[in-house]
Image (cartoon, chains in turn cyan, purple, green, orange):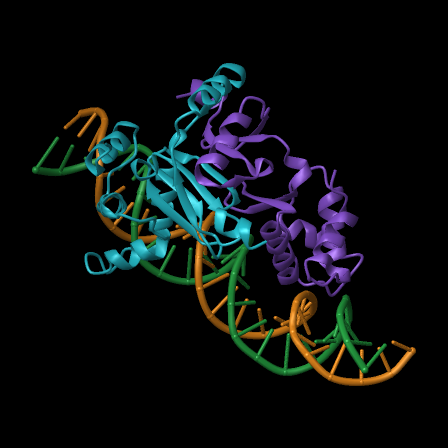
Length: 142
Length: 142
DNA sequence: AATATTATCGCAAAGTTTTGCAATAACAGA
DNA sequence: TCTGTTATTGCAAAACTTTGCGATAATATT
């Protein structure tokens, strides 16, 4: 389990600076049960910091995704949603029709991931996995 | 192989109207070798239709993705890129660090897809598959 | 503890994508 | 072919995300 403290420490070790803004954002994301938009994070932090800028939230989230501490997905309505990686240690099945997300077990996929590593040298991050398709509900109503 | 004509016909059968704008956009996407942004499609169609609006391009692309005729992915810089489904009958491996996309073979994944269908009733669309991770180049330079 | 370096911040502007609404045009039925 | 219905369009505005830049503050060094 990657606690927010660990994330911040790792960032520092990688040469990034740990600022109050980054601390707040990482903490908010880590303590949230659900995926959050940049705007939501910004709003939740208003009470703690009047001056925290939305652009800073976006930049921090980009950094976290780039460094592998967070996941970004396109929610219904085309807005970006973010979550820490430990919140997504499963496969996301997203329905193209209704937009709902279903969690699924990763079991059975590992051999293929290993094969990709061997064949292409590409290290897939299983925490990021999302499959698009059509869910049982929407399959029926077609 | 899904030709643009087929796509338009299917759309009509589904009750959507086939307009000149939609024809142009579907055709442009189908004839492109690479992924295109909405803006690029709009520009390519300028000579053919001065009045075609960018919003119409976005709406049409959304429709195509929703109905399963096109794929949308987040390119480098956070911009959306689109392609017809037949152009993506392979796995996209996208590097989180450098943003490059690598094509990979789907072989070996089918059993898992079938298992998802059996277990969850979820019909994964293999044309949409994208895995995020770190590419060989960027793995080295860490 | 003080200082130098430079990554990060806030702000404002630019770029990208979505949405509301009145006008238009695609399609079904006469 | 003509007509009515209503999905789709273009436009303009709103919403969302990224970017440039000078000011600030986190870290390394003295």
